[in-house]
Image (cartoon, rainbow, N blue to C red):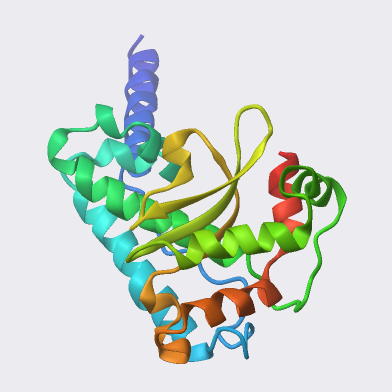
Length: 225
């Protein structure tokens, strides 16, 4: 009997220890999948270094700080945090919205770009774009307008709704389509820190050049999910 009781106590201790370790696993800055200079000449090395290592890191650090008093939320994914904002303690709703959104948006942004220049869309996504926007060129024009006309800081997105239809939307600051139950397919960061060192106030030039580094294979993958 004593051996059984001892085994149970050891087992419970291990379970408790594992649960605690899981709870304390904080969010981490995901590394880039390519070199800082890999997107040149369209996005310069210094911008990428500052954007990823400083701006993105700040969102991750501030998200972890916001959750310190409520460590159970470290177990949530970024999407789960964003979608459950209204159920979070009121004091952390705003910082989680901003910083989980910033972490999510930037992680998505890095992955939707590639060093493989001038990639072209194909497959099911291209067919859907041509169906919804008449042509690829017309889609790029409408997407570019959404990015160019975003007042202040924000993002332009190509998203898929619950019916599988494509839409172009723009969000302010670090708001995300995830909060609107939309699936992101493409994203363009139009905060000034994303382009100002190279393009200064020429946001339109930055938008036009960005198409050269779009990872259309990743976009196709996301569309088909």
